Image (cartoon, rainbow, N blue to C red; front, side, top):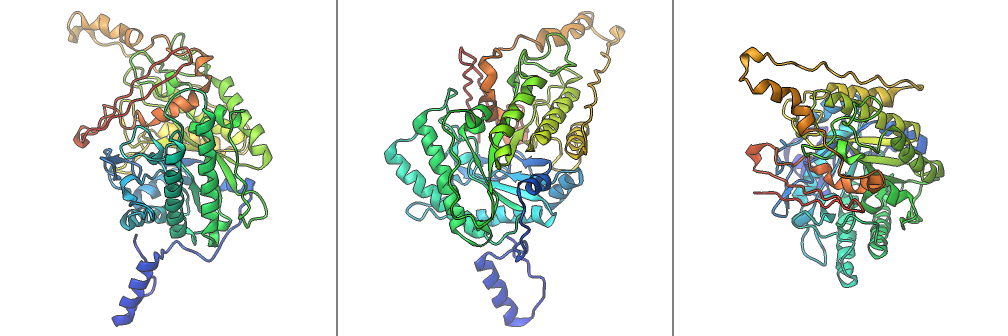
Length: 495
């Protein structure tokens, strides 16, 4: 934490004041002012969001570290660069893991909370809205994870006590921040198996959300009226909006005149185009796709249907929906038109989300290049996918309906055969069809719920085996499609 004192004092009085501010955790961004935002105002203010992914949730050997997965430390300049491109909000995924002490107090390392607060201050100082969550602690694939909804009843007693204690400390640290700060209870919480929700585990997810809301509200001050964000099973749209057991907790301690709970979901469909990194995955999407190069499901009509479900179930009933993650990996190495289709897909997602009263937040993992999801270079603060950003900003800024620009497919580059080995010419001409456009491994029916399956793979590109070799980080993802399109994701990070 960086305590900021706006006036300069001299002598011992200044030392006493500075120490007292540091102990109390006072920040320049704490404020006596509060702008009460109703649902419509909140949705408009949040606008288009950006995930500062693979940073404060990154970890190695159970220890959270914002540089563990190859990204540089977050700076105020980065946040300013994101804002300058038209983003209004930032999601800060945060893991706690070994930064949590032993029970019964479960004290969170103060230095870690200081750093989280420092980055929150970067955002608020830039007049951006910021979502802070508990991210990797619920992952079965993360070393040190502990928030497991499928653990036994006996284990749940300790898990829930720990969860309550950690959120008490986080909420108390930030309770005086104004409406620019939003808390999210957890991320992609499920039992680690890709099947329909299990009642016992879903009951625990509902309990976690209830504990979260009660705990944050109970710390008082601005937390009594702050917008809070809760997910259902694995942030899957169907499993959250459908009849699978998701419950929005009562919010009896809320001091606002109307609801201040929002619902979190992720959108990573269709998996073949969006996250599948294999050489047989799809590289195009939507009505402009060439024959055989797009999935046979999950196109524009499916997107519209999913967003409509969210509107009908939640938005129209007073609960904002935040699409907390969406994005598609870069496959331009295999198909020169891929980034144009990525732009078109992202613009369609943002446009449909806005039309249905939802808040879209793009997943950026910091990795540029093959299978990356970044739209910024976090070292130079320059944009790396300007067309994708422009498409999303165009959609969120539109005052009336408009036609999304068509996809422009570049003319194929024909190599000069005179400068190539004799066999290379024919290989080049067939490389895309032979290596990149195989049949999708999942059927339309099977993948109809793959928001949950793909969302866990959203980190696949961010930490794939193509990640920055200087970090030593590697992640292996095995995707297995069966009758129920169960996709098992294995995650490994090497020191």
